[in-house]
Image 1 (cartoon, one colour):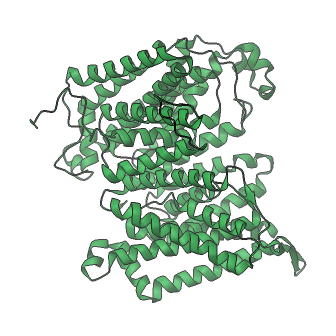
Image 2 (image 1 turned 30 degrees about the vertical axis):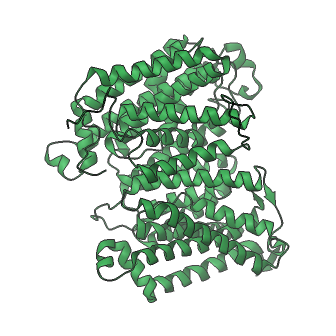
Length: 289
Length: 345
């Protein structure tokens, strides 16, 4: 039972990371490798400000990652708009490495650690089942955020504009969607999501180093591609699937668990070959990426 | 890429292959003579050059991103390193205790092993390419990345076929810059020949317009597969060279840092031409060397700037991003080598 809960909570975390990536991809066709560094900065801030009350520390972290997201958009991505997805992808790759190295200069190459929200590492017994608080909190938090995001996307003007822009950016602009404002907002939201992800991981793994957010971002990227990059639901689902499978593989492979990634990557290749547009894509949809 | 400057639109011109060859060999030999550490740096640069050429021939011509070439270099290096490391070392070295028996007695001549490295890289690329070449854009990028991740994860944990996370020591080294230079020259000739061949043109046609190319009777999947296989063989060659420059095989050497550095070289130089690959490798290597001196607190021609550790990669990353902002088609703007600027189109 704990392993199922773990798998759900890991899946949920990956879904949040994937959602942040998918949001930006939807409006800009940009695969933002530097999302990893948004997660990392929030984790760093939470560790550095650990003496403050948790909520304040989290708010600072979210502020930092949101600002960083907006700054990267204003200074780099905005000026690259229209050069094509491959160029933007490589730029985000460069940005990601550059930010990692900046963290190394600012925070040092060695891990910084602090016990963030230590009460979450304990466990509780519910209906004779022992469960860690952190996985319960993660699951609850994920559900709340996913519902909030669902509401935002389905019922608000911003959400309507997001959906319009991701299905046809040009037409959305012609119909009065302010592209700059929309893109900046989606970067901001992805920054906030990154802060939640940073918080969730830093509780479980308080060793923050410059490449802290890289692993989850790469796997979330894999997730959004297999889930179906053209819809936010697909992204979240794909992220969830990757986290869920990885967690289960880790539990059930026993000694062969070191090869969990091999199986995962193999599954990714197979899924992409069968459904290049992702699991949730319509069969004959032309690829737009 | 805008349609009014069709990058890489080439017919065979002798100067486009001889020019880069002269630049590379003069620089390699003259810089290599300066000091032992610079000679080593030149050798590494030549390995990177072959890798960047491998990336250029596929990514530059097809416009499809690949993050998977590190895997082909990894396998090439593994073949060449494992088959030339001395039997005694393989049998005794602590990390290799449960190494598969036939691998211990596997013993090839250095040059033969490099040919095998190329074949191995090409074979793995041919097999994976047969499946992957129908993917485009992001799906292709992620699928090739998955190949890299798969190989990395496998070799990092497997101690039957290799040293796992450890290093395979005592791989014989090249004696100087001539061997890597010769191999890099072969790679340049191969890449340039493909670029000016009909396959190269067809591939660039699919890059410019994925919809119209098939209407001209071009099989996108086939031309991509041919370039991918050649490109995989060259990546294997690069790995095979790398292992004989470093003198050791370690799986980490062919993972993210390597992928980033070689992609950065390609983009900074300009991905659409062979000359771009050469220029990118030279410029990034030169900048990296200067920054390395400063990082170590030495002075260069009287200029001494104290750089903290790690500043080097930061500056290279910033250069990459700056280059994309300033000129997204790279320093060479997708042109091949030429002696002087002509106004003819």
